[in-house]
Length: 88
Image (cartoon, rainbow, N blue to C red; front, side, top):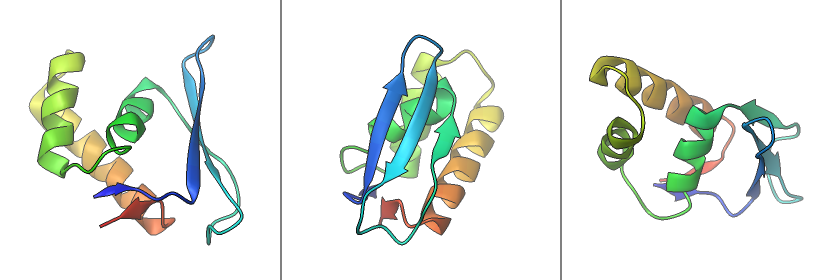
């Protein structure tokens, strides 16, 4: 899976917020706002990856139980898929 080229990531580093912005060809209108967790997932989706690889990377970066990270990743991927931001 990979982030669709119809979406751009904008990091607001001063406050740790990430924005996912659709471009003209996207079938979604609006802006997705997220924290560092979503930002990390979006950055990983810039390259072809799998859910398991994302979870492993998140485990290295964040100090949280695996089940919490897995749930967060699954929820984010489901939402991103729903708006057409992920190419399978």
